[in-house]
Length: 410
Length: 112
Image (cartoon, rainbow over all chains, first blue to last red; front, side, top):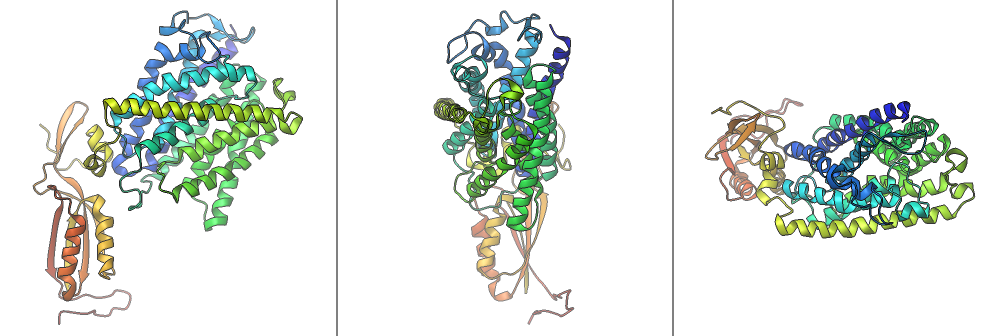
């Protein structure tokens, strides 16, 4: 057991867990005030439901020894998971801790999807959907890449979850927004963010938590963790800069919502590359990643497709660009694993593209099937009146900004 | 010249605004308000204690229009804000004796 590694992974796990409440702030600020509690609860509920199914079943299906496509059942209910060390010799951490660390990823990945369907999806249907989704979609894809599955054997590079987390959630978000349909007033009203300081708070602390997400993915307190830390600091900086310049070129003003979005896009894009690319590559990668997401977001907003908080543009597009650029900028000299196309190994790009495509197809198809299954039990949408009154009152019986006057107690 | 004060559901403001703009009504003042009429409100539970929230959020839209379009404006507001459920709101019409434009100080189209 390596105590330095264990200490860093304890901290990293707490950092990544913090990202889910911060995602709640990011999403909560972007919706209207009558829906903010519901939007935030869609992230928080993942801490409950995925947090419970992960140790019971999810961890085993992702990380127990199994086939190329799915982990086994030997770790159900955490059988055989204890204080013993896991990982490479010299860098072992307690098995419990590794399970918790991976659980924090499962929790936030499911919560990411909610941005596509806020302000109209019935809360019970959503909670049921992400519970099933984390078992049926997240665990297998995590196994493919990190559990010794077929994408790992093919040599796909995904340091901290560009494909497993972001492309995966982006594909599910695309399908969910399409199946559930737009908000009833999507075309007729200005659906404006009600608290942009929340959005900035969320994005800022997400960056902080992301050091656990990316540098923690070294699963050791070593040089590789420091490399991932460095690239996680640099790439979003470049994305933020390029995004602001694009804003200025288009409208003359750099927007705060744009800045918050840019930070998330940069973090998403560097996630698969974090421990594989050098710092100058990270700056380039981050800057380049701003462009497709920026225009995807603008284009999406002009269509009838109501991916309300642009999960597809930020996570789907950002994750795909990051995964592909990992295949361009990776350097064996840094990580000892593989070179990218710019360092004499063009084949890596194809492997990266295959991994992205596999995640999109599997996540897209299975998300569709799961939504249709959930629909057999409970309607996916809130009814017209519930949506019009607001999801806070209709789904939770609470208001975010309470005016207590005239509310008699009994 | 008449003042029309409408109290409507928050999600109907855009519809009312659009209906009035079709009648060339050029200005309005919108305020977030809370109140109740026949509508019951809803029950909220905070930390296990139950509350009856009877003052519900509404939007108040005030606009001043020439006498000849008052009826058309009221009908437009009613058509735009109606859902048919309890809680659709009210429209009040009151006469305006004088109206000044602050920028110029001029007295505008007063009661003839």
